[in-house]
Image (cartoon, rainbow, N blue to C red; front, side, top):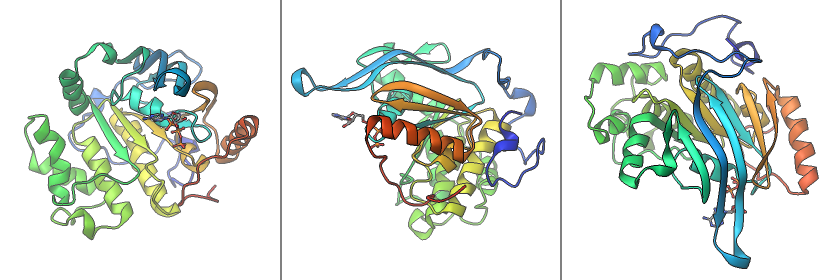
Length: 296
Ligand SMILES: Nc1ncnc2c1ncn2[C@@H]1O[C@H](COP(=O)(O)OP(=O)(O)OP(=O)(O)O)[C@@H](O)[C@H]1O
């Protein structure tokens, strides 16, 4: 499978399988894209997406005609200098914000044509989210946090599946703990379990390792990688960290709201070098995030 041998620090050998996620049959997995061949089907497609904040002289053009397809069962990292439009890209691709013009398709469904209530249903049913600061509900325990998307979507709750998912992310004995009783890395594992419990088509991750130390970040990235390889999920991750982006199959680079470059199966050094070129060309610093500096 592509990218498998390139995972920095995963400790997993080429071709080695990790334990499957609960409730997912191998035959249900969608086709895996092969480098060098056009993808059969894109999980997410952006077509000429523009996003403008404000009007007149004060308008900010955060995205300027972004067109890209993200293949099913692939892991894409989005990088770029500070203010280049990464978060706006993620928000528009995930249907959390609406483009000023252009279209965003989830499979065959054009999100820009959906009313807010339908969009919200679709996000619950088919998308998962992982954020830098975890965004768990502090009053709910771990089990209840993971169960929440199922309840919100009105779907049946299978206690065994939730417990298996917690075991899968390495927290079999924390179901009754509140988020405040867990470390940052453990909270992010809960957030990943919560994102995966609905078996989403696409997981959007916004700086998922930005608040974590190097070792913990690698554990979280392993889980995202496994969601792609074993569950057939599509992962889209915004990151400032070349060492995190190197876990992806493909890194796309945004500059001033435009896609300016991409790298397939890049290692941290290659990704850093590409970022240095882009940052010096725009003469704009990257936003600093703690945690993974110096890795790789
Ligand atoms: N709600 C908003 N209103 C006005 N301008 C905005 C808004 N959100 C983002 N912007 C502007 O749009 C541009 C792109 O912002 P965005 O947050 O997408 O960039 P980014 O690459 O994620 O930045 P960073 O790496 O610093 O988080 C920036 O100039 C930003 O100031």
